[in-house]
Length: 175
Picture (cartoon, one colour):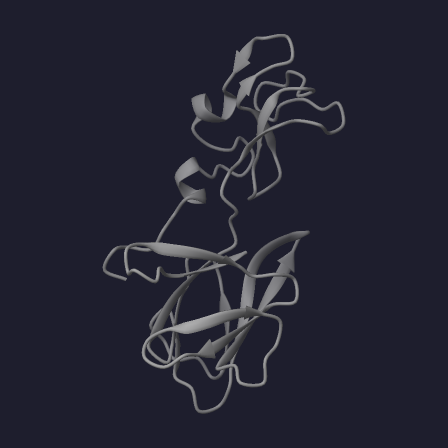
């Protein structure tokens, strides 16, 4: 679970992880906020992860009184749910929310299971574990030297249907 904030140089976005204890958004003056783990007495708002079906899927944002907050362009009554790609503007600072971790190719070291797409064994293979639903698919060389690129060839997770682009989304250039 992440908040995306503008980079310090203004060229792109920085992903900042929201831990289980949530995050405090501290006003820094101007149109920026500092994102710190946990709660803080000077926070303009707090972001609290929401877990659904054993997956972090959304977050709750609670604004402190005296601070201007908009979620997807609307002023909530101090409390709002942030779902995938939600825009949060707090005291002029623009942030975006995503629950999706970037995809990572790694060597499989779990129980003897089969690929969610082709069903072939995963043991010792390079795989992608979908951070949307947990499905595991081949994405590289197997232990016997064969190469299976199930995620790449299929173009999406076979279970939840998210594409590679869904995991690397960044806000539009114009904010």
